[in-house]
Amino acid sequence: MTTAGPAQRAVLERFPAGHPRGSWPAEEYAATQRAQGRPDARVVMDLRTDQFLVVTDTH
Image 1 (cartoon, rainbow, N blue to C red):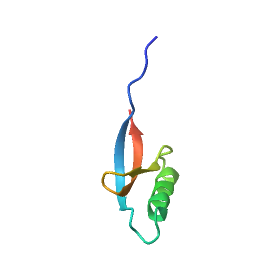
Image 2 (cartoon, one colour):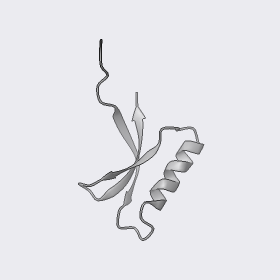
Image 3 (cartoon, rainbow, N blue to C red):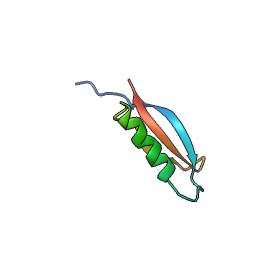
């Protein structure tokens, strides 16, 4: 049995965590990306840089 390695991610956009609207701009951007054909676009938090990242898996 073989196991797949960790998924590689591509960062589509970055949003500062200190934004007055919080993660909303990142969530809106991810929703737009999903509507445009990237169904795996999602928001993750990068604690090291204090940013919300919109990422997608690469294959």
